[in-house]
Length: 285
Length: 261
Picture 1 (cartoon, chains in turn cyan, blue):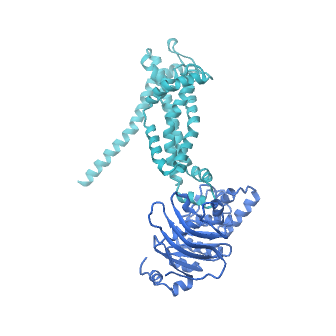
Picture 2 (picture 1 turned 90 degrees about the vertical axis):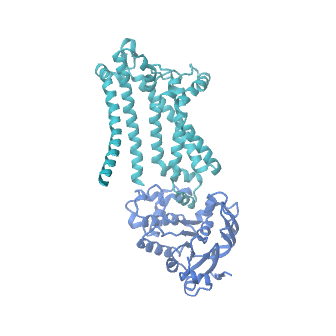
Picture 3 (picture 1 turned 135 degrees about the horizontal axis):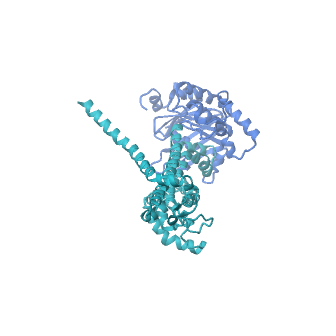
């Protein structure tokens, strides 16, 4: 009797676990199926073509890919140093009294729904960018800044957690050799936490590249590759959010699906790289 | 009430009227302690858990300063000055008074860089000098033969005993005058322990050593002087062979015969 219950339990959990694999495969299959028309009609031109004109049945994804890459890149450039700084402060420098309140508020920031960052960006950052950098304010730069603010708390919190795993005794050993706080941070804490820090950056990168709501408000959905960061642009998720309801032709609809397939592949690749780093860390420890 | 022998040799350190209070505590953990530490000899600190021996050890290189709110009182004299004053240069003090911890603490870097770390902190960049001193330190720590072909390898690939000898090499490389050992073999197997003990005895020729140990046999094997601490006080300090054979204090006798502890 007991063995039957055991096996029933084991099999139930197995089915639940395997269903996750199934869902991933299902999503992928659905996207692929709906993309087929556009893949067959456009082939590789889809990712190399920079003209997106649905009324002329022209679908080039390059501006959206470019926008995703550049806005994410901008966000990372802005957020990485700040996140490291915040994490160093919280794990090594802040007085005990400050650690908890600042730490908790960073975790709260990380929990704000991204649509709120988008609305705040539209009403607060767009005018600032317009006044300071010119243009209409809705731009690649605005998107990068809003994205960086959105991913900063997550990166800082995870980086801090990684730094906090440095054993006290290891830090004390460096102090005991005549190290200063700065020496210990750069030679012991950061190298020790390196894998976790890089992992958090890559996860944040994955979040930024797939982010929809925070940037839809401030990016402009303009399918044009421009070197001018103050010009409006688009990204893969922004295009999807703006255009799905308007897709009237089969090819238009299918090419949007192909865009989402691209996004899925990019995100998977990024998460795999992050996983690789986390796993490598476990093997060392 | 305490029995503290006069040390006729030159002294490396002298503790006078020392008190220490942790930030979170109301009562001092160490009360009115006086203790001379002989130069170029090994002084062991023994006593039951919580007696204050590690607390005292960590005062010699001001490790307690890493955590806010801890308070010192009294004096610890080192090279004719009281090192407990607020204007003591802690970086310089810690270069002169090194420390080895309960667990091996190899840094996340190569074997070479681990040993060279203390020298690099002092700004020594000359490659030949670094190479020579790293080699010498590794030889002093009796680990040169095992690691000479893999100096560029990650130090965390070494065994526990090797890592602890690497830590000793790292501490010796900056040529300190005093070395503090905080239960250095508590995480090691008996063979590695014997190796470390042998090394400590050899090092005595060049440095003054204070070793905290929970293992009385270890104190008896390696040290020249032994101090027995109990409830934050130094009960007895004597020559090791005398303290273990003919203890002057009743508490010491009870502790070393295993009546408590």
